[in-house]
Image 1: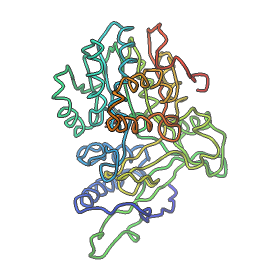
Image 2: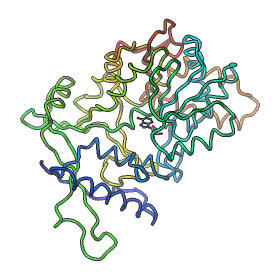
Image 3: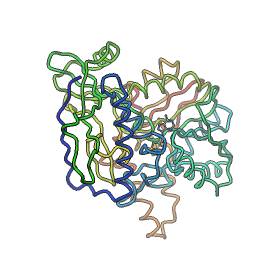
Image 4: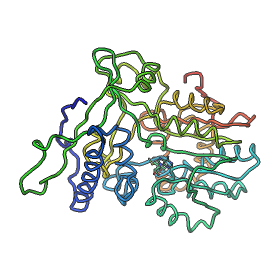
Length: 408
Ligand SMILES: C[S@@+](CC[C@H](N)C(=O)[O-])C[C@H]1O[C@@H](n2cnc3c(N)ncnc32)[C@H](O)[C@@H]1O
């Protein structure tokens, strides 16, 4: 295992931690240090670090009680389309209704539902189309599941929380910003053309904080590297040429999830909405540091070791890899386009034009967030929508113009 120097300074502008956050951080660091100490070689693969940092029960970022979602500081750490505006869910409703009609079911499965914001907008919008959906949610975070239950209680809708993936699903699946939250593998090409796997180790005890201050005994983490196994070496080499020093990610877990989708989606379609690109762009020579980002109170930075349990860790989605995995799972790729195109094809502009033009203040409030969803400089172009499915023979309305499947 080779250790890598780590810049331990907190990026400028990051808000300081309050007492509760600092003690949560310390508990998480102790937990992670314990896990690392109990590995054979003191090396925790980055995928495992991200798994614990985001999902360790009671401690992980998504599994513990921090606010997380919020459209502006100081609320939460980041925002998402459904959190920005209910028009996101309202626009999706037309596409979901079309998929339900084509499959002859009323079952919608939302994967990773966050605070329940999408369901809270989508279910009433489907009701307006005379559809009372059987709405299912699959959520890995117990804390978020509780928040979803509280939020959706008042809808008096048919909502069910699943404990595991279904086995024989017919209907429509939605996953907004879920693939990006799946733990990823980090790699780097060395100068000799070998792939190294990145992980996390502990700094030797001599460099750990000692003395009697608040940081006494605090574990200190560092990025470490080891030669990639043959599987990872081959996977990486199939996707990009060797570029000395180039560091990026390969989301083996998300690909496995997509492949597995082919086993349980019997008829219908899954709408996968996320930030990302086709593989050629993902591994562009200029993207030499990869796409990994952390979010803490609306500040973005690139140090995944900084505040485990307190900060979001995310990577962009390689949509070519997701499409390949879906094809391997026996699914068809039904469409791929930008979020802006998808939402406009699905009827977002018609929803806007249906608003009361005399209510100038109300209109302005609605238009701002919609602009964020559509603007090329914000979420409109970076975010993509991909539909994969089985047994559907109708062209999906969300992709009627601007379908870019040929770029995958
Ligand atoms: C970035 S948040 C997005 C939440 C919500 N979809 C939104 O757009 O506001 C990621 C969500 O996916 C959940 N999640 C991550 N991996 C998951 C998995 N394998 N199965 C189900 N939920 C998952 C997280 O707990 C969280 O609710």
